[in-house]
Every structure is written in C-alpha cells, then in structure tokens.
Image (cartoon, rainbow, N blue to C red; front, side):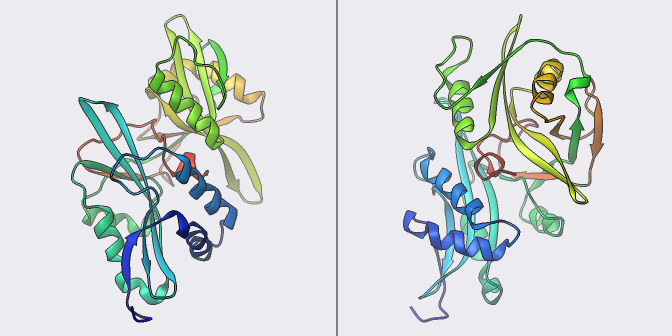
Length: 289
C-alpha cells in the first residue's frame, strides 16, 4: 500500500489507542481520557452478531486518518428484533476529506437498521437530510421537576444490585448496564408499579458558571417521567441537581420549565422511528455529555 493509498475497514481492538489519539486531535475540547474510556465501554458491551463493535476507520500505509464510531443495539423479542445504530464522532484528517464518504457509505449499508444521529452539528443537517435522515426531536425541555407533583419511593440500581421482582429482566439489565457506564439508574415505586429511569450528569455552560443538571437517558415514556417528576426532582435536588433535560418537540404539560430549540436536534434513518425519552446505549451513556 502506498503512503497516499487509503482503505476503509472495521475498527479492531488493537486500533483503540490510535483511534483515541485521532479523535483527541479532531475534537480538542475533549481530553484523551474521554475517548479512551468510551472506547473501553464499547469494548465491554454486548454487540449484535455480525455488526462492528466500534465502527470503521480510514487508514494509509502508516496511519489511521479517519474514524466513524458506531454503537449497535438490539431490542425486542426474538419474533420482533429491532436493530439500532448510533452514528457518532466522525472525523477525517483534512488532507483526506475527499475520501470521507467511504465511511458513511459503509456505515449506512444495512436496510434493516435504524440509524440515529443524536449530536448533529447544525452545518450537517442538510447533509443528513440528503442521506435520508429525518428529524425526530426539535429541541430540549429544561425541567425543574421538584416543582412538579408526583410521589413515590425512589431507589437506585447499581452495577451489583440484586434484581427486584417488580422489574423485567430486560429493564433490570438496562439499568445495571447504564449504572456501570456512570449513569444514575432509578426506580420509582408507586401503587401502579415500578417505573425505571436512567439519567446522566450534564453540566450546562452559561458564561463561566456551570449549572449542574441531568439528562434523561431512558424511561418507558415521557408520561412516566411527568408522573414521577416530583419524587425524582426532590431526590435530585438533595444531590444538587435541580435541572433535568428532556428531548422534546415542545413544552411538556405537567412539568415546570422552559422549552428551547437552540440545541438538541436529533435525526434518524431507517424502519423504526425512535421515541422521545430513550437514549439508552447511545453516546450520551457510553461517552458522557
């Protein structure tokens, strides 16, 4: 292979350190530990058979010059299995940008997969739409759940917790898995049953002051969060987290807060439109916010 010849291939375990180096150059606001820790989480998680663990890279004879991270997930039953792939963190060295389409072409080849782009830069929106993506989330709702109604008993689920009887095996595995990623996994017990939630730490930057908040990563439905908002809000407030950020297409009835379209737009492409309130196993959970 000549120095300038380039090829696209799947990222292997032995590429992780070099991929972390490349992403650190491409996204200098993120420390190298951010990328390496996230890649290690990708290394340890279950991945549907036949699909890449990390994603794809571009390489020359002497170096990795491009990368596209992919996070595949499988949900549903054997009779109704759904495959989702979070497409994230694309970077190609400037002198090889004319070859960058190789990455997207190979990444989007599966017709049965629903692809998500949950952190698109505004300048890429038209490109995504040209590739067949559709927007499913227009903005974010910044909720102050402690000001809302909703009671219950909050319990946390950790990586070593025992399975409670009122959670399915699938949801308990999701809560444990995300707790191991560093997320906050909760169960609110109300007379109607147990309601599971996953939240991830999020620091809102406003000038030089960071406002502590949590991003809603998983719930069965946003209505469940509204019904539990008061209990969750008081639990979080005691831990110095007054805000919860929720994907939304407008104001959320029953929650005190503000809706904004300044950020938070999300896109999908494929057979199964995603729902709001479910960012499980995406870059928000595996890499952090």
